[in-house]
View (cartoon, rainbow over the protein chains, first blue to last red):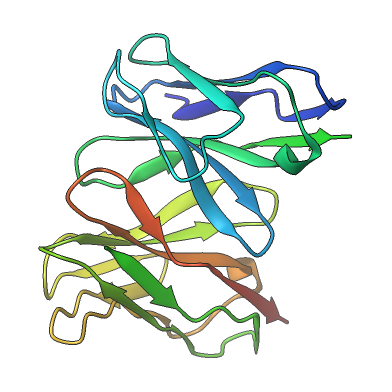
Length: 111
Length: 111
């Protein structure tokens, strides 16, 4: 039982490059989330998925797209990376009111 | 809307000192309340939770009681250790599974 896993752990991109952050959970949770964490800004929700086949925008969706591939996997795509997207990205999953479980994070730098 | 206000720190304590981190919330209905902890370089971990008024959540020597009359969920530990150095987030879950985070408080415990 690995919980929530994320790949890659670290990534450096040049402005304009694209990439996909992968997230998977093995807890049979219905809901999954993508957050970014920046110094002094706390955690901000980018997108979430309440169930397989559905996705909704969070607080800061611009510049990102997501795919809920199946119940286990929820990916985040940056089509054209910008320096403002330099951040630590966390994926999480949840079931009802039991709280969310977080992955270890991806540290992304855009130069 | 729902919101969480918590002490932001940073706070530095000596080992074996008493810890209190204040947290108050604003919410409609009956939210669930959580404390998350983030150790350096890691993702967020669920520390404890309370799902209804007067519930006490506890874990690893930490405690917090859901006080509906004062809309508070203060975190306490009687004797902190160096290993408790981390960032602590007070968190609320309202009608959906989405979370509302406080800004986080960085705690450093010196030997």
